[in-house]
Structure formats: C-alpha cells, structure tokens
Image (cartoon, rainbow, N blue to C red; front, side, top):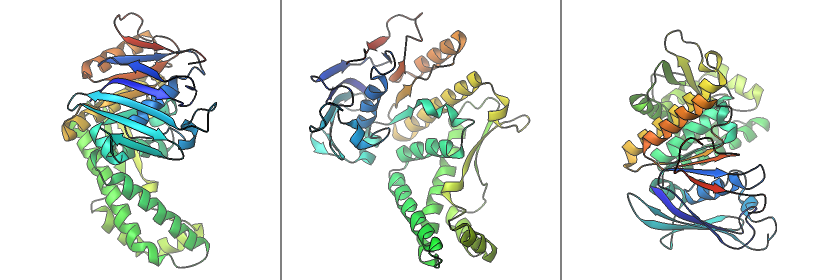
Length: 344
C-alpha cells in the first residue's frame, strides 16, 4: 500500500490552515530542525495506518486551538484504492471510504511498521522494547492479537490486585492461562516465521523462555507449583507470562548476545534488517506491501552506513518515510523531501 497524499488540520503544531502533503511511492524525507514538526507529521501518518498516537490521543490536538478536533485524511493506492480519515477529540474515530473502521481492520488494510528514535534500543535495551516490536508485528499478522493483549493486561492487573490484598488469585487463573498462553504461542509462531524470511547472516532469533508445550499448558503447569505460588504471593505480582518474555538475538557462531558483540552502527543495520524482513513476512501473509515509517533512522550512521541504508530501503520497492534534521541521502537525486520550519 502507499499514501498518495495526506492532509492535516489542527494537528499538534500544525495549527494553521489545512495542509496537504503529496507523497512519492518510494522514499520520502521529512526534514527540518528540532521542533519543526517532523515527528508530528510522521505521527499523523501513524494514525492513518491504524496505530494511533505515539503518546496520548489528547496530545494530538493543536496546542493553539484545543477547542477544535484534530483532523487527518489520506488517499491510499496499491493493492486497493481508498480514503482514510481520522477525527480526533478525546478519542480517534476512523473511517475508510466514509465507513467506520476499527484500528485492527485498518492495520490489516494498511500494514505498516514504525520505528521511533527510542527504539534504537531494540538490540541492547530492556526486554520490553523487544516485546513491543514483536507485539506490533503480531498485531498485524493476527487480527485478535491486540484485543487479547489488552484483555491479558487487565487480567494481570486483577491478579496483582488480589495478591496485594492477600486474597487468592485463583479466580484469574483460567483467563491468565488462556490469554497468556495464546499470546506466547503467537509470539513464538511469528519468531519461527521470521526465521524463514530473515537474512540472518550470523544471527539467531529465539523467544525465551524456550518451551516444548503450548503456552496455555506451560502456564497451567506453573500455576500448579506450590513453590511458584508462594513466590508470587511474596512478590505480590505474577512472575511468569507474556510480560516476562524475551526476544533473544545472538551470534550464531559463539552464542554471544548481539548487544555485546556489535557496535552502535552495526546494531542500526541489524535493526533495519529485522524491520525489512518483518515487512517481507507481512507481505507474505497479507499479500500487501507494507509502509515503513522511521523517526531519525540514520542518526549516528556514517556515510557508508547511510548509503547501505538507502540501498536496502530502495530494494524493497515499498513506500518509506524518514525524518531527519538534514538530507541523509544527499548524493541521490529525485527523493521526495518535505521541509518544515519551526512554524508549519
């Protein structure tokens, strides 16, 4: 899928008249100094792809005109042609060809992968960063995933509340195992699928803990263990399940974690490889080309690294959006560039 154009009005720091942006089917650069609205414009595209706000929905409304709704609109083409609009108040209302659509269904219609600045820590950051990466991918590949993840988080909170009140968490056990096990199985399924398309070179991917039974049975067995239940009661929170999993990325030849073995630039290259190959998996499963959105992907890459990134992105044939303070691909002509100032 591809954006033909998009429109923003009363969105973040775009508080003036309606603004229309024409987009190239290939690589698009969103350039400008800090505070000019680069990430805000990227966020408007995120909303139109069904991912919503990078922070809180209320933050999307113009700071200068908070009494009015924020609006975004886009025309898409590719495997299908349709329009998507979003009206934003305390919540986001999405419409496709003027018919209401859910976030889940929109993500299936416009599959996209988003990489934000903080996600450079995908390799050496906390496990939660890698879980977020996997959750986004699973949410595109499995329609019920986002809802089940939300439901599981509610069960986690309920189980934690019972433990803190020194009450038995048994009433939550069935849903904890059913939902948690389903999520664990989907994460491992996607990890295995990713291995079939990823150009791993010298890397191994594995979701930990490694289990040889389905996730539901794994959790049920743990909840039958009296020693675990004692530890859980002492900690006053669950100690197993999807919230405690880890995507392990190691070197194949010696088993060293990629976080220890690679330079910062090498980590950026590995991340881009993972994202592109995740896009290949999306295309394989949904039969739609994904859209890639990057916030300052090329920061900290040297000239060689930027050239490598350009070639990798170009080879996909997909539509790509990148924000940057200045053109990271200045040696290549014909790239669509949008220049923003401090007052869009």
